[in-house]
Length: 307
Image (cartoon, rainbow, N blue to C red; front, side):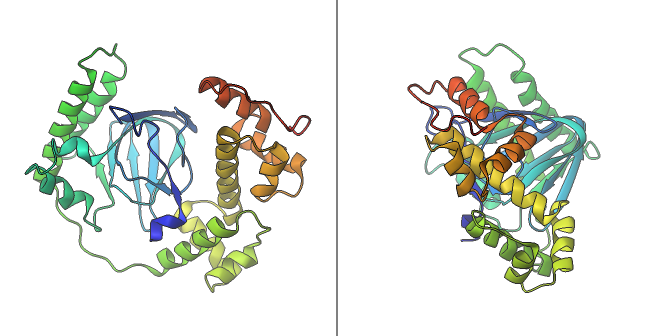
């Protein structure tokens, strides 16, 4: 499957009694830090975004949707995407399983959900105050946001579910299916290049390697990245390696030097420099902070002197 080539950003609250995840994002910082943040990823859950300040762009392999303050975006389940800031920004993401909207197994509401979630032509939907129903959607999105600023009591989950149900009802009553489009040449090229990176990120990779993977020239490879992702191939490769490294630092006891080699760095000092430039923390500091936050006990750093 196409999505197997990209990071599966699993809901941090998956497995809990209420798998509803709200991300507070200010510029390039997400609280909590979610897998797949700022790289191409996908998830089985649905996602709504409410932008309170600045501007963001939500990108898939085929299209880009921009939203400014007071606007919102819907991202369908299983859609390969990432969200990037345009200047300074502040937004909240609301991530939840489609089962929240079906009420119970076998419910007649199921078809009103799957007509969207299983429709391959619905990727992104932008909401702006230009139409009455969009204003209704935005009002509900910012209602969800306001719930996060209030003290949460035992009725919080019920109120969230109630707002989500109203939101979905408004969406399906007004949604118009997009016209079908053929897969673009740029889409196919990006698929091949990103797949190559996902498989070979631990190896030395040159621009020539990436271009060859899609049977295009080096200049065309650079152009495709600029058009699709607004960054160079090198920038994306480094972001992908840093994301893999942060996961390994947080989730394994591997020595830092080993992690650096695993994600494609022959010198641990270069890995440490790039990681700190990307995250603001050395690899060891990132690991300690993550373990402390999540209550990891008994860990001993086995890579002293490798920051």
